[in-house]
Length: 122
Image 1 (cartoon, rainbow, N blue to C red):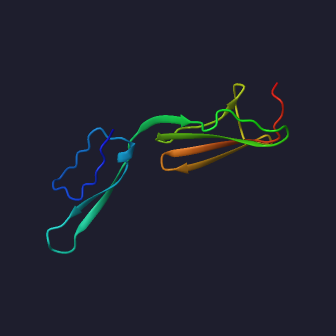
Image 2: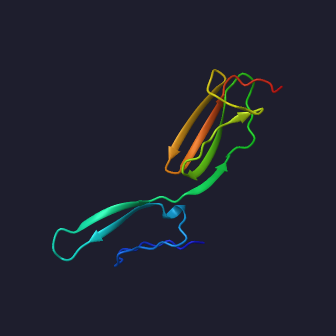
Image 3: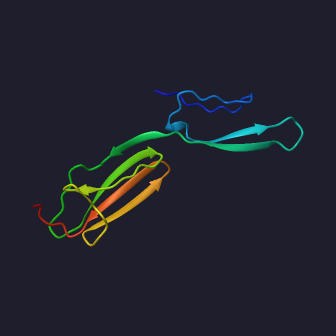
């Protein structure tokens, strides 16, 4: 368990963060004030690199013949991972049978594969 706290004031020229995790990602402000206006600040952004994780919310899906079904896969990674779908050893590309969409939010990506006109497996 990681204790997360907000530091409202820190004096010094360096801020040392130990054992950073993805929850430490974000903007940090360096603020200088000596009682003489104006107070000035500079912002710096911390990015934490980490390997991909994959979550498939529904690992078993079914659909009536001739209908469409959407499969979802959620990944977390920084930098962003290359995510794609495969079927019977072949990479799936968007066409009349398959529709690929992607939603991105920070280091989280959800990729959706819609299979149109579901047919029998061979």
